[in-house]
Amino acid sequence: MKSFILETQQWLNHRLRQIVWKRWKKVRTKYAMLRNHGIDHEDAMKLANSRKGYWRISRTEILHRAITKEKLIKWGLKDMSLLYERRYLKG
Image (cartoon, rainbow, N blue to C red; front, side, top):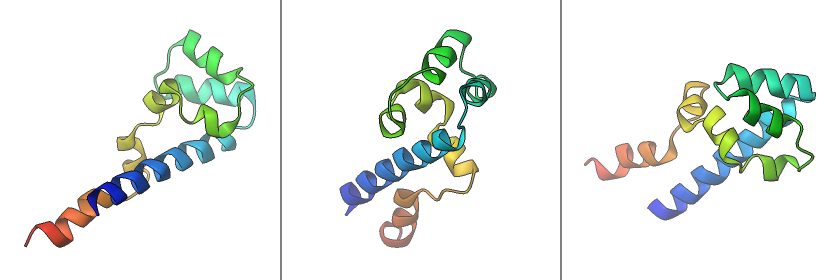
């Protein structure tokens, strides 16, 4: 069950990064948001101007640095493995 939850959580994080990237429609917005999330100028320009698809971009290391797991949790995503451990392994 733990491996299933881990795989599901990773896929969900991937999908959420894709959705966030898709919401930043214009190159200017993508660049500005990446800079706001702490990505340096060159990496932000490289990723913002990329012609790769949303799903492929959401796997990049740069986007993972910009939208971390901690930020996703801060934005309201629940950590499924932590919830599972609390419910079934605690007691």
